[in-house]
Image (cartoon, helix red, strand yellow):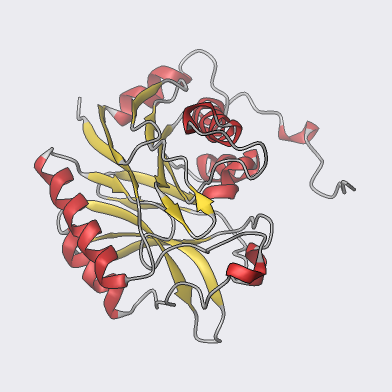
Length: 284
């Protein structure tokens, strides 16, 4: 058996890119010392997230737009070295569009990139939307990535699993509830949803799931933390709780997938001919 030590981070990141790189470097170093080979950092960890999702009065210019082949991601690759590191950033394309993106790198460069497809509330005022979910091969296994609200849609993770992903990595800037907010985030209803989605996406696809999230506050948002590693049976192997931290777990990924899928294989037992709902429309 070959085990993989993996980790998901809950940490606070802001607009200052140099400070963000200092935090990322510290987290990578700490994880490396623990033998971690796959590390997931949060959504928008390079440049910070949006100050608000529904209040234009607290909007700013947004995070610095970075190129997928630019010096900043080469810097992240150098920090990663022999590790495989996943991190969120604001991507700029050659046509001037901005995307809420996540990149997977190691010392050899960019291994994969994903542009957030599903945009909550007013996020579409700041970012263009991605249009696909694709898995890709890495030294630690085949990975599929998504960002935050993407995981609220079962089709996102299912598309990655059907493309052979052994590990789903979801990076988030998931805040607490905007209404009926609670003092203690442990009891927050949006945190409960965050946790439920994490466990459901792992269980229904019977693959390993890493969930990274922002912690602390930024603008009007208060993030729920709750970074975790979930096994293919939907069981949480490691969890930071609502505080900042690193959730570390070790698992033989191939064996875990084989065991989970041996009797009731959710992907194998699908009947896609009965699911013809792709053209359906739902009205509010």
